[in-house]
Length: 147
Image (cartoon, rainbow, N blue to C red; front, top):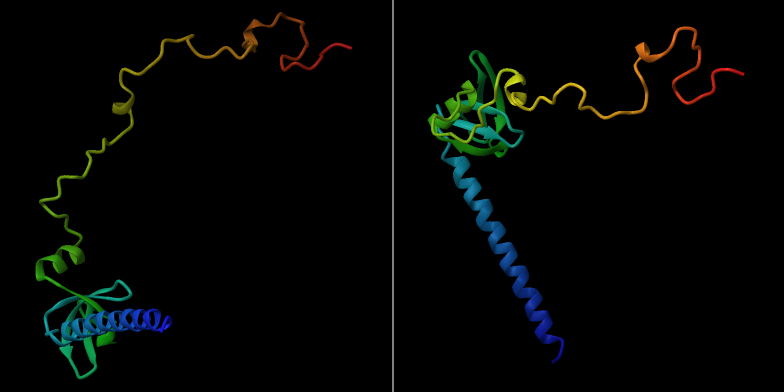
């Protein structure tokens, strides 16, 4: 009797999982059966194409003008609206998309007013080559020069 409750729970969960999977499969099959010539689609590989001919289990797709390929209906992952298909294929931007940041042509506009005055850099303790005296052959990198 103690094993009955866990067994019923496991069977119930399995039934729910298979039911939702069957619903998804049925929705995909309905979507694939509703494809008509002239429809824009996206394949599971991410390719965009225009349906030219619908056959029993396959589709004749136009990948670009004059280039056709035969694909299985199972390769279709999404049916696209006509305006969305043309926007994606032609590389047009969405006119309602105002989230794009404005990028300047060059970096000079990003640094205006941020310039530091000369001589305000960090002193690393090394003098410039002009600071050495004539005839001074010592190194300025910390190593001894004369022996």
